[in-house]
Image (cartoon, rainbow, N blue to C red):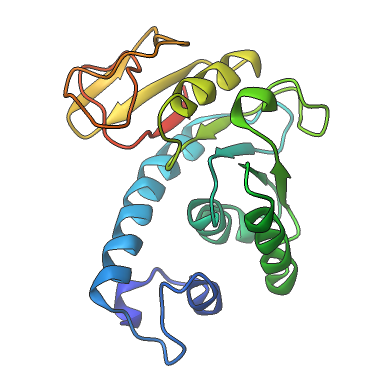
Length: 203
């Protein structure tokens, strides 16, 4: 199992996220979950290497964070070792926000913040920085994808949509309530010709 992890990746974190069992094993379902998240991590990793943080420290907003699988793994793999960079998890369910705060405290992930607020309201919340370098939305269903794009625009970034089947597209149709061309069941139109679960980043 350890051969499937990256060097330095926190085994304790993966156990806390229930991706690994307590004895350090992967079942088939958790292996799929790990591959899904790490596929997106590889994509974001390239962007992190290319951009210059606007304030000298990278800021990342994770919309629809849920249990914050993506935010925690991004922090663990990309930011923890750098000694700088902040991940802000944005989630509407207070119990998940508190759970994430507690987990970050146990793991010593000091530069992770979690906000109990709807994606549509987050852009104007004073608890968040005025600008962000990267915006992600792995599990933002229905119109929350549009809210994540609008958040990126307000935060002075130029977001674009990426999926394995489409090149980045601009401009996104912020505020759209239409479904995308591939007739996805829950994902609204984002300006790309084909959408998978939302994968957003700043260019």
